[in-house]
Image (cartoon, rainbow, N blue to C red; front, side, top):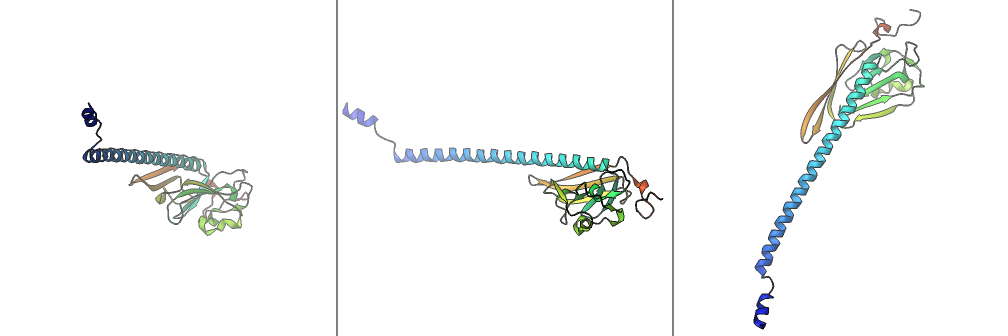
Amino acid sequence: MYEKIKKNDRGFTLVELLVAMVVTSIVLTAISTLAFALSSANKSTGDFRRTQTQVRLTTLRIQELIRNCNLICSASDNDIAVWRSDDNCDNKINIGEVVFIECGSGNDHLRLYTFPSEDVSEIEPGSIGAFSTNWWSLYSSNEETVELLPECANVSFRFDTLPPNSRFVNITFDIAENNTVRKYQINAALRSQKGNLLDESGCIISDDD
């Protein structure tokens, strides 16, 4: 009886323990790898959805701005100046009615710059320069920034004809998604272009004319 109990109660051998440790290690490694893969996939999916949402919102914001604006005043390699609306119905461009669509010197983002609506200094389309030159500081001491796409690349502005006679705007840009660069574009046409307010030199026609 004593010998039988001793035989059944013996522990695991060293080989059995080593085999168990190896199997456990393999299982844990497989679980960790799967968890990492799932986490990466979820992050990639989340980043993709977030980017797509930003692109959709940016597209809607810019299309709405251009469709309802009075005039594409000017453009450079890095921005577009838009006469948003004639708030005080004076048929004049006031600095508070101007919006810039800007991509920076690196063409690597899209943002809007606006000026306080109470700033009513009159400006001529021909005096509007690139936002980065700070020409607007002569008419307004403050600007407000709206970030649309904080990270993109190769932003480009195209028109059917050069401002201030443009009626159609095309904006293209690239975004890197999951190690793949995708090209996007935003197309918008002015519903009502107030080119009739400009004389041959591109200046706003005065009431006396």
